[in-house]
Length: 340
Ligand code: SAM
Ligand code: SF4
Image 1 (cartoon, protein in one colour):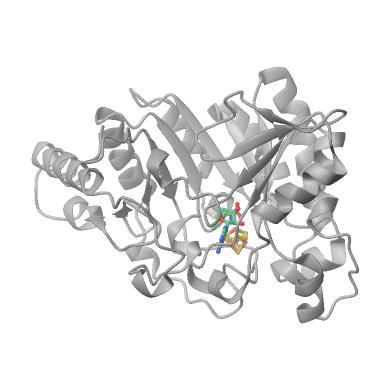
Image 2 (cartoon, protein in one colour):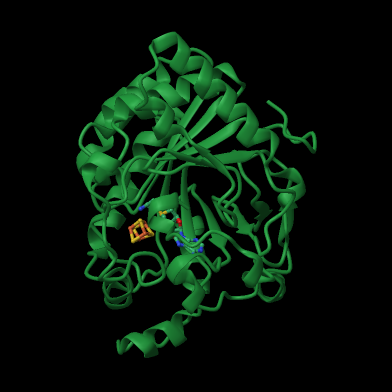
């Protein structure tokens, strides 16, 4: 399905919950109010929207949250998506805390890729940054996922928000002294995983934090690893630019929403946990699909209304984000509702 600028939209992120078992400072620090469960789409409703999306050419789905693995039935939902005609790839993004427990079930359901969000390898800083998370459980899950994924060709990726870790540690009052984001590179040496750095976006609580500038991060990488080269292989659905470094098993990806505006190639829409189809992170533009799902129309009529609303939302997708001019943003929600 194309938007008014001719961009092919074939990827949808579905946030299945706004609940989370962590409290990352930049996303859901203590005090974020969750919406009542009755306002959150059921997994059947999410699947109905996904099926309409597939009919319109959305072939790739990312299951996100909140933390998707805290939602009961998450793995069954993934199985449902995998059985839906037209959906070719279903991946998940998780903080990894519950991953070890659900790994087998996810694999059985047919998951095609697992992204683990991890911003530091220091247990103390991890705990402070995530509001109590145990790094050890994420590391165990990572090892198991890599092992299981190796045989089944299921890629495991690390997503790290590009924070100034030393500054963060100081603000949080924990004794971390460095090195900073560089420490995460070790994961791509030790495991065949891509490590992707994501510039902090000024959404919700993210506004309070300054991102490490990816131009500087790239310059520093080139300085440390003069043998680094662009990696032109396709790694997934998104806008990351990848680099290979001699001696590394995985690649390093940079997702530079601020310093490498990639909107001209944007291929995605987002379904919030409350059933709003967002056409761009930055704006409120989109369609209230929950209203259609819960209206009085019969199944066929509902389907045709959903298809029309989705088509229109995609068609009107804004040309580009405006993170550089935050006063123009109309999105006022938190990342926890949007799903990243
Ligand atoms: N709980 C899951 C997780 O952490 O992967 C899924 C939801 S989380 C909202 C999805 C992704 O959004 C995570 O990788 C998280 O680090 C990222 N994220 C949250 N707030 C962000 C912000 N302001 N800027 C950039 N990325 C952000
Ligand atoms: Fe939870 Fe993910 Fe947000 Fe952290 S980034 S608070 S794990 S939803």
